[in-house]
Image 1 (cartoon, helix red, strand yellow):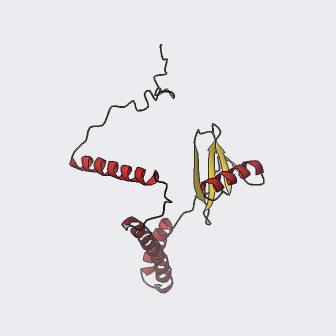
Image 2 (cartoon, helix red, strand yellow):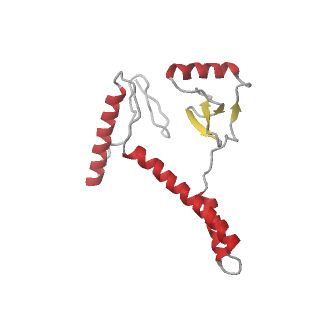
Image 3 (cartoon, helix red, strand yellow):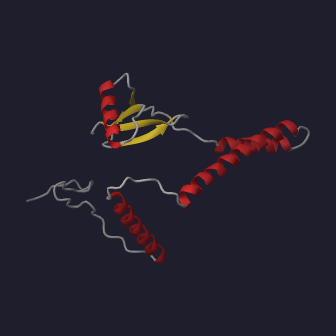
Length: 180
């Protein structure tokens, strides 16, 4: 049997997983790459064993879960200090070069400010009033899997789905491709 393919795309058979990974296997580059691969494999095996048990998964307190919020707090604290310091330098430093330094601090603080994602402008966005049956289905699925629903649904041309957040209040956005 001949399998015809377009040379621009990877040929794949859904029934037998033929050619799922058509690339040549990567050869380890050195000791650091070998260590990275070994640690990734160990972490993957540990995660698989944890997920396949029937126990309820609970968040762990490890170094990363403590350091990540501490680092975020330090970055935002530094940004706030730049903004406050810049305002003080601009207001109190008249008659010297301090307002220029204050303006520089304000500019850097403005660049470092948190930015909140927005709704996509190039995609159709649906709200509960627009598609009540779709939102009822989403709420039912969310209830079964033990999560919360979404506030908006964006529809695009991709064959994919994702959940993200938008806005200051971190509302949830479900993006669904028309193919799904």
